[in-house]
Amino acid sequence: MEFLIASAIGTLTAGGLYLLLRLRTFPVIVGIALLTYAVNVFLFSAGRLTVGVPPILRDGITGYADPLPQALVLTAIVISFGMTAVVVMIALGAFLGSDNDYVDDQPETPDDRAEGGS
Image (tube, rainbow, N blue to C red; front, top):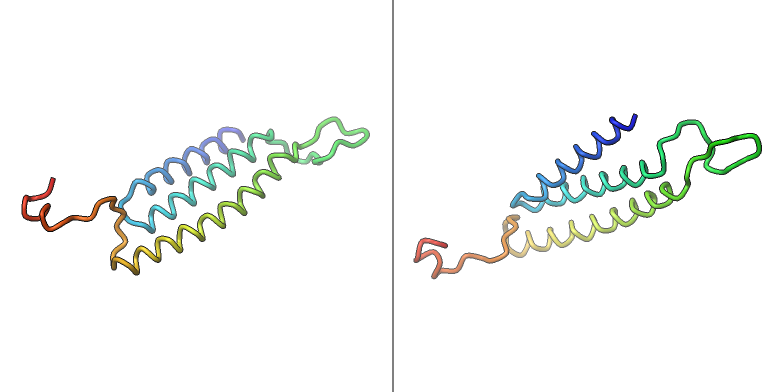
């Protein structure tokens, strides 16, 4: 079970980083979403992967699941949803303002075009 969860976290992180390094806004948004999913799975797995045990310690039951990582994951889901909505709105504003969705820090000036770029 631990190998499966670790593989899922690694795959989500690798895919998220790959998409985050693209030069278009939509893959960057999807990459950020994949990274937040990887963090959520990591936080959830930090509370020990137990099956069939209650989240509260009761009489006669020796084990329990830690409820803190579950609460952290629920909070992280809400934060990531809000963050994704803000990033989508910023990307949409940038797309409508410049008619392309490339992620560039410095626009090309006419002087750079005349010199052949740098």
